[in-house]
Image (cartoon, rainbow, N blue to C red; front, side, top):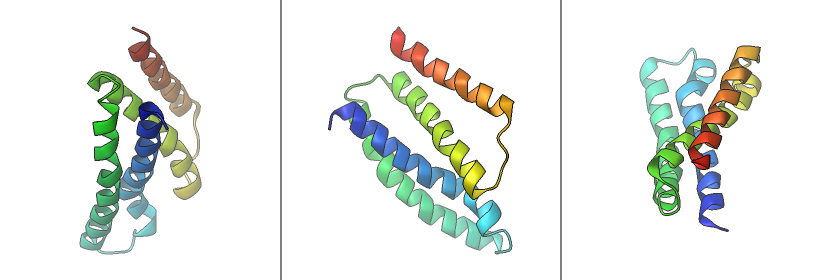
Length: 113
């Protein structure tokens, strides 16, 4: 697997854990005490970092840091939308999709020039 494909794969894994750490507690731990939500989120976030740090190290060998960051933001949206819809029960709205298209445009722009 080449470095970019490995980086993207690790970033997707990282983003799944990040999205769950940041947002799942709003539904899955809604009635739990705040300290429980924080500790569970920290545990999930640890898994995020276990994928994010190697992704950034590997990615920085073949991408510039701005390219890596814009790619990360795009993948965040691509992971967040299905999690928001299927796990958190949020509706998809046109303006959310339009914003996602603009972020994908930012990726194209940063890799084009």
